[in-house]
Image: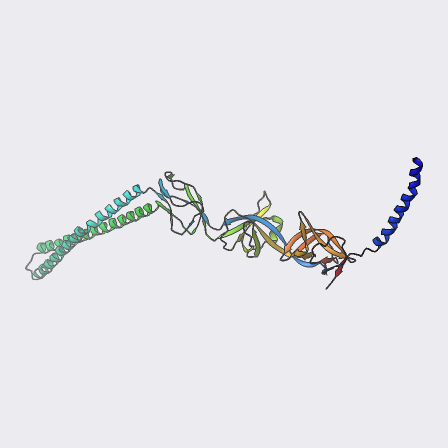
Length: 384
């Protein structure tokens, strides 16, 4: 039995040799992979605007906390946080019954002062008539005195009568002036009472948005106690904190690029104020940047300001040539007829170009539009 197995072994080896000899020529005839047509560009250093970024917070250019100028119970709060209001609109009303009583008393004093006018005017007219009569009598007595028909004492008596009536006219006019003074004082009291009563309505000093409602009906409003926080509409600025080493790069009046994370659209701001002092804790100063009107702007939003500092030499590639895969970015270059993948680190971007920090160097032949399915090591054919 063992002999038979040994006899069959050469036959099996011959069969295997025959099979191997049959497929070897077919493997040698495998066709090479087709070249993929690509468009390339030779990379070179280029001028790139240099800049730095400062972060900050959006704040209203004009904001205020409204309070009552009189003490009283809050009757009504007509707004909620987020409401837009117009200038002069009533926001909070305070109990004004005491103020109304004061206004009525002031008006009563004015009416009383005015009621004395007819009597004072009549007194002036009467005194003036008496004076004119005395003056006319004195003139006649003067003629008689000149003709020696009247004694000196009698003439002096008529003269004194004239002086008495002149004094009466002066007193009547003085009384009328006193009444005029009282009327003016009463009018001022009425005006003050009216103004005080107006303080019972807290109104918006400008058009804007209610940021916070700090009081509810039934609470006691006191002078200086906050009632409503208000921001002026359409007037916002970014207050950015800038390192002290960057002070020379921030110029008042300069136009800069601003990005607000909550708003996709980039905007251009203008530096309107630079803090004259540096914060000793953070070693930074504050730059205030006016922002254009935008309906989505709100106080407290996070923003970034980019300040230009000059030009620098960088290596930049079109953004479309970069392929992002998770946290990795890569590009394809052409080397000796083959596509080679390169991992790259990206820097700043500008329009449709992006800065390459590492992974490429000047002179590399970048594949601009990566064909679908192009793999590392695939043969390529460069076409114009």
